[in-house]
Length: 158
Image (cartoon, rainbow, N blue to C red):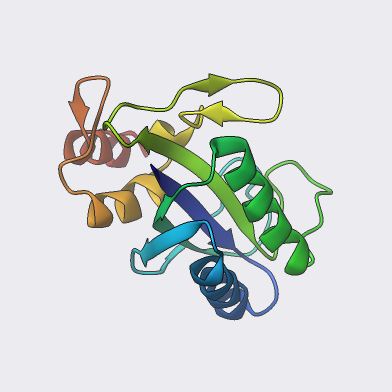
């Protein structure tokens, strides 16, 4: 059993509908036992900033699916939302990224291959990920730092 934390984003089209449809589809998947969502929040774009405002969230997904299989499920949901990958960090109907994963013993899942990097290499740098993650897991720590301290530091650096 794995616990996945999935960053969710949408900034074109019917943003809430894309997110809701993907959430409902994930809940129905046979290898997934529960899906919890943080609140939805509007955020400014990160990286490539000349684009519309995003709606972001984080989902906690409990599943028997191996990490690469979970990634394929998420990519299928993006395809169903007609996601187009034309600009790196550009506008999208739906963006689903595994940002962090735990094995059943509570240890962090680590991958570094061409298709999957865990933990996600930028998750600890992005307020739009950390704020909803904190809502789901207020006691989250990474490399000895609490999520609350990290959010405060990033907010100061803005």
